[in-house]
Amino acid sequence: MDARLDHLVLWVSDQLAALRFYEQVVGLPGVRGEEFREGKAGFPSVRIAEETIIDLMAHDVSKGVEEGTGVTGSAGHQINHFCLSVSREDFEALKVRLKDHGVEVTGTGSNSFGAQGIAPETIFFPDPDRNVIEVRYYR
Image 1 (cartoon, rainbow, N blue to C red):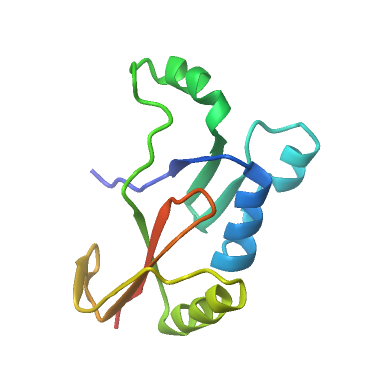
Image 2 (cartoon, helix red, strand yellow; image 1 turned 60 degrees about the horizontal axis):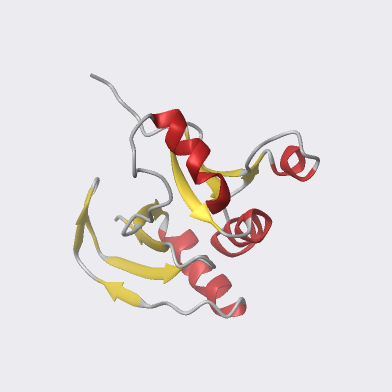
């Protein structure tokens, strides 16, 4: 099977604030931001890669999302963290943006195992809703 991650859903309290954070601080391009602002889309997203996005879903719609999945008790839970892999140059630029926006790097690591092997350096930081993001680069 040749599978790819299509999307993941993050629960956020303010979808526009989350969209701004992921666009301006993390550096991911927004998807359907204008449509969301105009009331034409139920939620905005940000693009990780050509085939992968993060949906920024409001907590107050969790009941409807749960009904859609058909799994009782599944909606509204935060995940422990998700990890983005970037180039070394983008990693260094992200650290500068985090500092410029007053976002604290809450954890660091080295020689950490991931999908592409061992990453020499990794950082962790929270988004405005305390979702934890890990970012790393590979050699």
